[in-house]
Length: 183
Ligand SMILES: [Zn+2]
Ligand SMILES: [Zn+2]
Image (cartoon, rainbow, N blue to C red):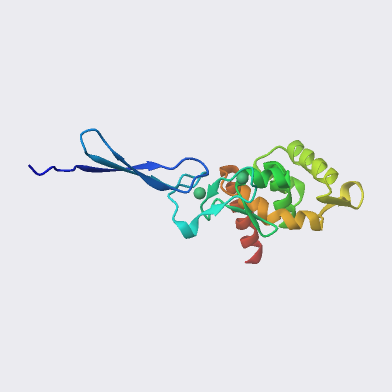
C-alpha cells in the first residue's frame, strides 16, 4: 500500500520584532503542516518584504516597520514610539513648530488647527523652555522664531505625527493657505 502524505500550509502573522520564517510539523496521521510566519509592520500591520523592512535603531525596542512608518532622526531609523521618546515633542507642540515654520502667527495656528489659543500658548511656553523657540520683540509685537534645534527635528516630527488625523487636517489647511498666497 502506498502511503499518502497530506500536506497543509498555513499562513500566520509573525510576532513583534521577529522577521518571519516557517516551521514544518509532522502530525500523528503522517500529514505535514507547514506554517509560514509572515512578517508584518509592527506599526501599521502591512505585510513586509525583505528590502522594505526597517528595524528600529533602539536596541531595546527591536520592532520592525515598513518604509512609511519608520521615522528618520540623525540618519538613523526609529519606530514612531522611540522617535517620540527622543524628540520629546507633543502633538500640539509639533503643530506650533510647523505653523511657525510656515510663517503663521499663534492665533492663525489656533484657528487652522481647531485648538484653543490657550493650548497653543501653553505649547509655546513649553517650547521656549525646551529652547526650540526664541521670543523676539515686546508685547503685541512679540514674534516667535524657531531655533536651529527646532529646525533639526521638524522632519522627524512630521514623520511621527503626519498620520494622525488632526495633524493631517492642520497640515492640509496650512498648505491650502500657502497655495492661496502664491496665487
Ligand atoms: Zn507600517
Ligand atoms: Zn522602537
